[in-house]
Image 1 (cartoon, rainbow, N blue to C red):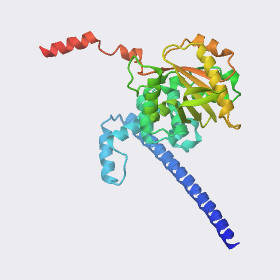
Image 2 (cartoon, rainbow, N blue to C red; image 1 turned 90 degrees about the horizontal axis):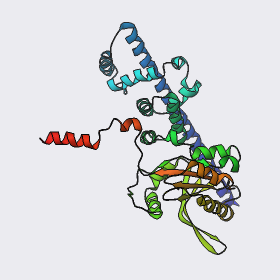
Image 3 (tube, one colour; image 1 turned 90 degrees about the vertical axis):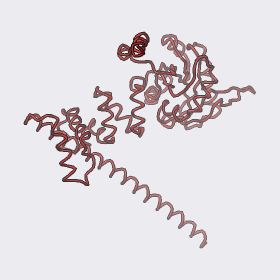
Image 4 (tube, rainbow, N blue to C red; image 1 turned 135 degrees about the vertical axis):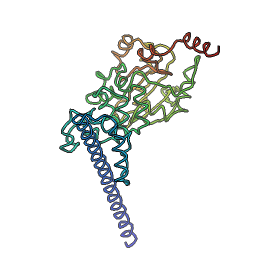
Length: 354
């Protein structure tokens, strides 16, 4: 009896310790968010004071180096007030000048500015430098908060224009999945997927692509998006004593379902939908848990005819999406026009050789 009581006491103590650690972590996170919000509000306010005085007194940018030097001399323990950072503060105020209440009330009371306060200052600087459209900027803020993107990851996502690709895959989710699962599934898939971290060159086959993606699994998962968990490659299914192999099998933690990915070289073909429908049915019957949502299929091709893909999926009963993949990201037209041609480069090089 005494041994049992000791074991019970240890269990209760373990639970108590776990609860206390959880509460401490919650407090630490809240304290960090609160401190970040206060710092962001301060930077906005400092930017406002400098900008307004510049406008009123007619001062130019020359006041900023002087401020940086004087603040460093008089408050040597204070970090974050370099000349460069003060310039960012002024820019920060000008970017969100319309949100005048930020200096009067807590940032957290405003939806958009709440996002601003929840991401680190370095993230805010990156977004100011890279994204001019406010709605797109706030979209990246929300994704950063939800997915815990580091500054480097945020930079990669901006570089690959993920905001323009999210939710663009051709799918039949609206007729095969209930709300809100269908909306979440649509927003989970992209089109196209960018695999510029691979070193494949033409010609290559589907198996080589599959192997390379698994070699770079961390970057592959980052491109797929938050929630994807790798289950297996060439995952075996036995149906009616016959062996079938899925290219790549994942489980999505938010969607709570398996995701079957088939890799195809070249154009999308309607018969791919039938094969994927079969795979999804087999996964649902053989490995899906009763509490899981229906399995989703994703067919990745190099190119697709959107209308052809829509027809192919229309009467398929399993939820399937079709997306393209790119091994290199195509340059935007406006950037292409600003780059020198091969002839211009050769002419310039010849001129230097003389």
